[in-house]
Amino acid sequence: MATIIQLQEVDSTNNYLRALQEKEEQEEGTVVAAYEQSAGRGQRGNTWEAEAGKNLTFSMIFHPQELMASDQFIISQLVSTAIKEVLDRYIPDVSIKWPNDIYYQDKKIGGILIENDLSGYEVFQTIIGIGINVNQDLFLTNAPNPVSMYQITGEEYDLDKLLNEFASQIYINYLDMLDGAEHEIKEVYKNSLYRRKGMHAYEDENGIFLAEVVKTESTGHLVLRDSEGIVRRYAFKEVRFV
Ligand code: BTN
Image 1 (cartoon, rainbow, N blue to C red):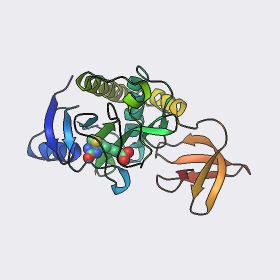
Image 2 (image 1 turned 90 degrees about the vertical axis):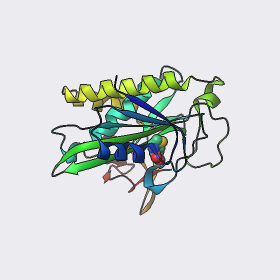
Image 3 (image 1 turned 60 degrees about the vertical axis):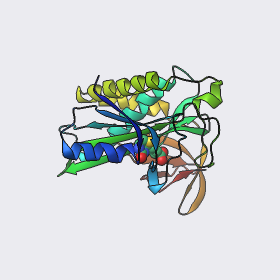
């Protein structure tokens, strides 16, 4: 296993790991975890709420070789499936809400913020930020519909043990990807998707419609078939689950 750097307080583990890498080359899979983040970042410029000492907030860095920028969604897929795999050991009904939110039933238990740096057409560095709601009992903000492991089972969890499990599984999935297991990772991802079967309500710029998931593409696009049989293809942020 790679090094784990445990911090008391930091603005954001993603920022810290990036600054560390800029100062000195970090070994593959280096983890920076924080007891508390003062400015934890979420997707779409949101903040990430996590009570100090109750949750997992950490980042990992990798330098993939020969990963085309057009295939970068495989990183989201290998990370989200690794997280689901570990959570499945503790709680039921975990799924991945496209593109990479981690859900328990209809609530969000974890989020992922991936920051890829490109060199030409390739991804040369990826910083993967992960927040998992573990022992928090009360959330101050209702967005985005949060839930913790503690709220689900009534049990408290050892954060260090969990961090090791998540980091190891992400590392394993990353090595699998390098070994050519993209197809298997994509299959597991597809089978883990939230609302992967049946018709559900979605909303795009034209309004609300019913559709079923057809597939996700290696670019990360979500392909839906609506109730009239028309296939619709969306990039992240172009459609939302209702
Ligand atoms: C989301 O909005 O779903 C993504 C949340 C990602 C939060 C994690 S916590 C550790 C890492 N550091 C950050 O500032 N954000 C990510």
